[in-house]
Amino acid sequence: MDDYDVIVVGSGIGGVGVAALLAHAGYKTLVLEKNDRIGGACSSYIKETEKGKYVVDVAVHFFSQGLKGRFGKILKKIGIAYKNEKGQLVSDYIKFVPNLANKVRLKVKGREGFTSVMGLRPSSRDKKVEKKEPLDEKSAYKKEEQKEIMSVIGSILQTSKKKIRELDERQVDLKTWVNEITTNKKAHDLVAVMCGTFFTIPPRMASAAEYIICLQEAVFKNDATYPIGGCLAIPNAFAEGVKKYGGEVRTNSPVSKILIEDDKVVGVVCNEEEIRSKIVISNTGIKRTVSTLVGEEYFDKDYVKTVKDLIQSNSAITFKFGLKKPINELKDIPVIQMTQPRITPLKGFEEEAKQGKKVPKAAGYLVPILSNMDPNLAPKGCQLVIFGTSAPSSVEGGDWKRWTDAYYNDILDYYPELAEENRVDFMDVFTPFDYIRYTGKAGGPVEGTALTPAQSGKRRISSVLPIEGLFVVGDTAGTDTHGVGTQLAADSALKLADIILKEYKLTEIKK
Image 1 (spheres, one colour):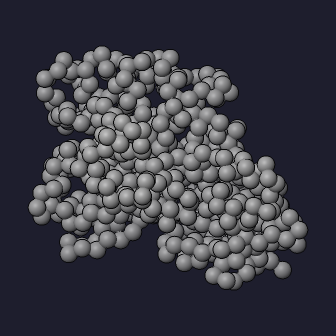
Image 2 (image 1 turned 135 degrees about the vertical axis):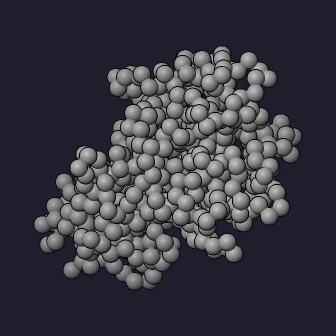
Image 3 (image 1 turned 135 degrees about the horizontal axis):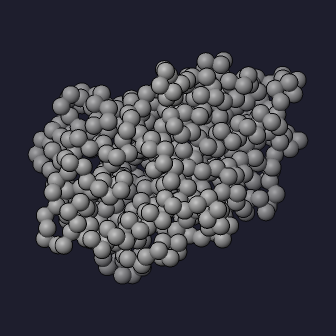
């Protein structure tokens, strides 16, 4: 007799999300997480200093949707979110900071003040721009630049579903599509920064259709948000759903093998213990699942090649600052998208760039000021800020120190206050090496299967693997799944749960 109906390996958003959905449906469910806390890259850790306790996100997160999106859909399906008297979806298990979309700001290096990302309009609290150049009074961009940028954003928001389908079928990349609207370099650079924030790949690699879908969702749902308690609050809410319906969530439980007998899944090996089940769902990435946890010998050679050839997104470098004294300019803003006037190699890497070598480039940073969204994430009077930027999965000689030093100095060009004596309480720096350790995915990609034209929509590799009872969930697999980051993982969970509920009836599983 099986120990469980379903075993989920890994507790990222996709893993713990699908576990909650299946537990709610009556499947005896076990989640196994190798780390000492759940969530994978969507997790948080405690940092203690003399000032007190900080709750720090592992990655860099700001969520395009909260309860109006796929998180809310999962919570509603499992009965732990409901509509209040105003008709708004709420949950007793998680709270989100509301109405953040219009508060996100864009900061262009070398120019004073901020620009509102939503509509490129500043708020009344934004600094006035010094008119050293003929800048529009309501924007940190020159009038011609703003015109071209607004043309691109307007085209994105007005693109019909029929046109999106056409772009998807033609497999048009984002750069090619934007070129049809404008060749203005500033407009292209801003799209590149926003595409990097969404998909962690350049526009020449990104699916135009998928980018349009994601930006339209973010704007029209107007639900950009952040969870009270830090990123860990989201997987924690899903985990509570698992436990509410009789499931288990175990940490410090690394799975070394998925067991196959007669071309069927029969369980896993965890901490040298064999645990049996008819269904195993891996949230550790499709590449690792096929090559390591199962073994390539169990799959057709063509399938193995297909999986190996999947393109991953870039990884990330993040700087996490606990500040004893807040930076004045950042006192009231929840999130900043920092960008450069020109995308160029960082200082000290110019010669290597000329030689065609891989070098850090000054593109931009996503900067959530976490303590502005939830003051309890930092000690009283302190500020918690994360700067995140795209990075390759590896560098020559593994010398990440040189890269992080270059990015740190670039950040100081924006905010020299960070170098002031007695300003910084702590600084943690994470490289792709750290994200490999947290997620178990080779290269530490932000998106395990990048959202390229060939890997998006109906062409995205299936969550259903060619072994009976074996599935993959999360950002690496799921045909016709959509969304930015964690939204993509949550969509994978929703759609995989539907497949399993249809194909693996509970009465058959229990036999």
